Image 1 (cartoon, rainbow, N blue to C red):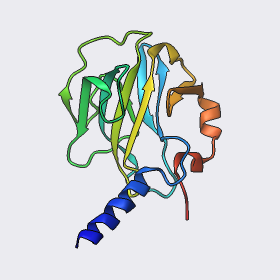
Image 2 (image 1 turned 90 degrees about the vertical axis):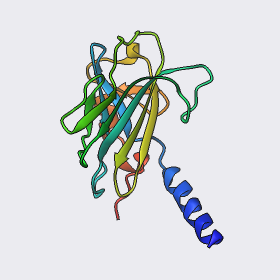
Image 3 (image 1 turned 30 degrees about the horizontal axis):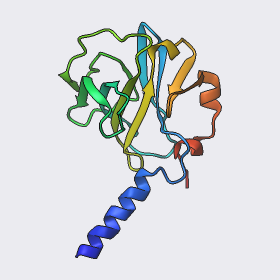
Length: 164
């Protein structure tokens, strides 16, 4: 029985490592005044979409597990899933567990942690600064930013989207 649990844990670790993915499918884009969180959809993946989001003020000692002060937290109810969410808002089917009560400071680093409903990918994490945001630009992975056009032209396999 103990070996069975170890095998399951090892399988979960391999799944969470992204199976060769270079980047997390989580991104943020839009204007500084209206940032939007997105999840890159993977072809052939069922229920792909965001089910929970936490926005944190990143600290110098921050990690993906403990990124800093939680500023905003929403979660889906009744199986609702979306692939785009405006920061500070709770889409239909989501509950605000902690409303955003402060404006984002342009030069401050923030972290996003998301959970999603999928038959393959389960979570996402990234850091960003609002001064990186601009219409037509996205920030993804470890604060990497580029044009939306360049981002969309990347191979889906770079994001762990493997089709059979």
